[in-house]
Length: 483
Ligand code: SAM
Ligand code: SF4
Image (cartoon, rainbow, N blue to C red; front, side, top):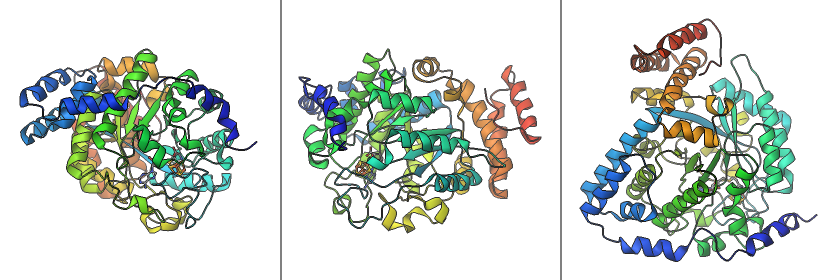
């Protein structure tokens, strides 16, 4: 069957809808209504955000339109506080694993697009996946996101095989314990298959919520050209029981304020449709240059660093319980800044070429196999060291999804602010493993200080004893301990 034919019937169902949950005119009218909010308006929204409640679109519009530097500072400060309250001062680490750059789509901004003749195409074999995973594990990775183009070569059964392969690789020191997926939208049946093989978060980014821009970026006649098939992908995921989902926008395609509103409307739609379960994570990559892709160089809607910080803070305040992911597309100084006010997950030691871990090259040295460029190519160890220098605790925790604390379960835990009761102890255990098995001597020293500091907060609580016992077990060789 022709690849496009495959989803024709599904597309037709969505075409029948009168409208979808993104109303472009309404979003613009909300942004325009609050074009110049007063300090009092912004303060009123901040007051509500203090209570860790998801904001309404007009409230988010006020934050996005705020131009007062003093109030922006207050936004940053509150975003920082909320991040600490909800997620503690831990930062979760992962690294992507590019499985294939074969793609039938033609997204104008992406190096993998089908019309890009300068791209060398490759899909990893199972042996090559094993080789990549071994290297990642030996560097200390425990969590990955598997990335695929959309092509006949990478359909769902193949994806399932790759997930099983990744989980099957064990080395002396460990294994990948959580494989998230970033791929094209799928059908409910296909998503069920992914659930069966135990994926972590299922990520699909809408790229842009603006209908007209979406059509310009994703040519008609390609699978990705269907806006609603992508927009309702997380609804299908929920129907399939895949309740741990990640949404995102590729910033630089359209006005950044509109896109934040789109992310919020998507969150509200999911919460309202699925019993309060919104996205588990939001990603907000900015476009970076890709080989043979003129659009990716200085796009018209490129987001400045200042606006980028503001958008991250606005997201943190608008959806306080959703994890925010900042990838190595961002340079290290930007990552350092936005870590303060909202980000809960980052990648490090990242290589984004297909087969790039085995080539052992830094991602930005492999232009002919890249989808885009990364701007932070430091090793995992040096980023772990830096996070420790900040007094924060790096985490490789994979406990929640393995204990079934996802979707509604996870939301209940998060909303009652108990996340830190699991997350910090689990961060302590996984950082300890990292220090024992992989860290350089300098990072070891920094990490031990961070562990000591974070242990303090549990003194006098019953869990303190368990933490101490687990640390002793880890010292004596046990691994993968979690609450
Ligand atoms: N092919 C699948 C898709 O498009 O959904 C999944 C993987 S795609 C390789 C992952 C994400 O990379 C895309 O959703 C897009 O947001 C991002 N991306 C594409 N081109 C980019 C660029 N030039 N700079 C930064 N990110 C880019
Ligand atoms: Fe293919 Fe995804 Fe790149 Fe679009 S963004 S060309 S679908 S890999």
